[in-house]
Image (cartoon, rainbow, N blue to C red; front, side, top):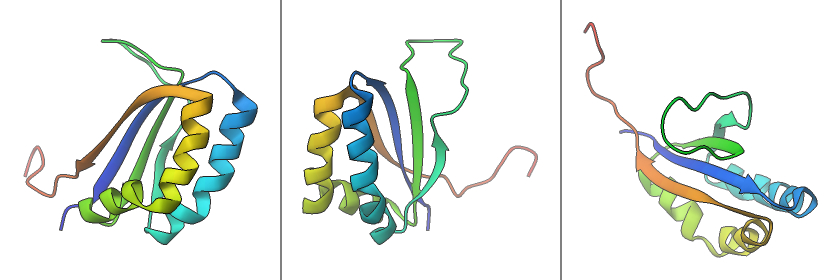
Length: 102
């Protein structure tokens, strides 16, 4: 079964308030089996528009990624993020098919 992912691109306007969001989401993500694949870090944006912060979170399945986002707990934590930043978030199914060279 393919994994599920959140891909977020964020511009943070209030780092202190965004820190509260980060503190609030840890236990929620853990409850849905999430793990960070990308969490900030150096990046290059050779095409398209850039944001300050990029995050990729992996979930055991697309259903788990969707359930986490729509949970009451995450929606409460989301309020902190929305007050401190603007960004884009997609929830997407991973790919389990053939890879180049196979």
